[in-house]
Image (spheres, rainbow, N blue to C red):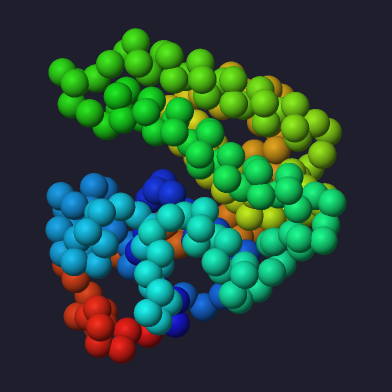
Length: 223
């Protein structure tokens, strides 16, 4: 059984969405934000204190994009693109672009515009990185064009990884500044039944403020 440590609106949503789209069985441990403060026991599982953490036997993965690739490579390749495909390189590029190029702009805005205490917030930094986000959204718009999805005319983890950024963009009110085809793209992704199931899971999952009693300890033959 796969175990996913997740928190609302965290990067772990990419993993949850992939699990739901592939109909893979998993156990969810739903953490409060920030877990290092509200669920310090989680540091025993992931010393970084970040979400996601996916546990699969002895494998423990903490990078959301890598986890999505791992699930596709090990369990079900329906959301992957074959190396023989002419769109394989584009698929890899968009999948990594989602985190390495696009997400950092929103992460900085979120931290210095919303998460930090008021005395530590930096409106000038937020405005600078909001502009950088708009540049990335324009680049995505050009690459997407009139297509429904980024590659092969079907959903892949590239769409899931990119789509997570728009959860944050909606939260901070930036989606209205995105090009029309990007906004339409996000509406298509949100309408996917797997994404709607993610929202229901987040709505109903109990918070793991304490370490679950039946959670295997590291090195104890965890499942």
